Length: 520
Image 1 (cartoon, rainbow, N blue to C red):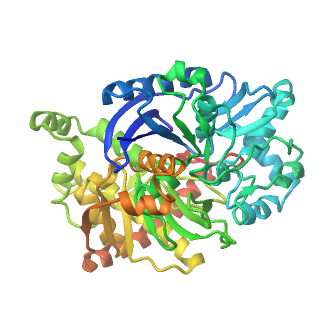
Image 2: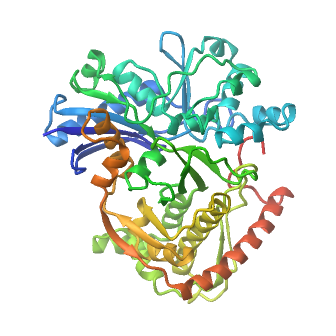
């Protein structure tokens, strides 16, 4: 039997996941990694290539051992990674500089770009679908300004998933879905837009070939074989960005398909034609999809999953103990109790993530509004439910923004990620949006997407669309309660008014923003 290996380099961990060609997960090994702030560099998030490569090799070895397979049993592999993270190399392929996705060190460079080139961000956004908020241009400018000796040695750039494949086979390339998040890219052409680099005064000859997802790159090198236990005949195949490959792993591969991905951050994605231009108000981002000829309009909700973890750990020790005694997850206990709270959570309004405003991305200070002194109505469970409702409301607002500029009608949503395990949360998302919500059976959508890419490169599947249609199956479907939707529509209006007021307090220096983009 043939087996496929997916390497998933996420924000918080790296995982090696082995699948058979029917999409069944055989084994997984995971190691957490930490991206530390560089000494003296505020808001930085460095990526330690040597340490993280060791963790990656360890995961591959462990996944093989857990599956009781040898390296020669792996027909092909691919990689997916957090987007926006970049690696810069010298002319011998040695890593010089690397940062993880939300590295925000380049605030001064973003400000300089906006002041010296007042219209350039909008000009570049129309081509690439990206702003400077998480882009590579300001970060490379930061390197040029602050570490010129390193900058002068820079010969090539890649994304973190590309770096893993480079380490495995010695071929450096990128793909549209991940490379596109640098912002130095054309959505329409699905390739680098090097004039963007030269226009702002950075090197324009550092961009490697751009291959479509599923392209065969080579085979595992002898050196990488010794480090990982993989066989030298294992094919190495171009992968892509985690959200886009995750979408493929969820069956979101046709124009008009919609997904809400509920992890640490929430993403709301809608598949659109590659030639469709981003919205003029720069409210959302647009990324190349892993399917040729398609892009994805994307809204991002900051920290939705992390907020839930904070709330659980800060306030729910009793529920943790109860969950331990019952042998269930703490979130299952909280959902069970929150399901008894009326729709609308007694009017509690959480202020955490705003809807996406990509052109001026700033959040208010975290808080809850409309709390009462009645412990029977205002308690952990009503606050917990209010957080679930608010994540769904912000997702709905982002989807409405995408609908406005694409004209795509949304009546069905694929919901995946950790949040989709909650029956209450899934029903709330359906009620808030008024859409059917479909839950896929697969629990490792991003890794499955990478395995699909590996299978395409090995000739096992015709293409990503065919692989997705063959492997994705559905677990549950939730239908909307339209009476509940009316309540949520009113709550959404109140939330939007309240959030504007909370942003004014940040502007006036009264409160501190939860997060803001560099240069804001």
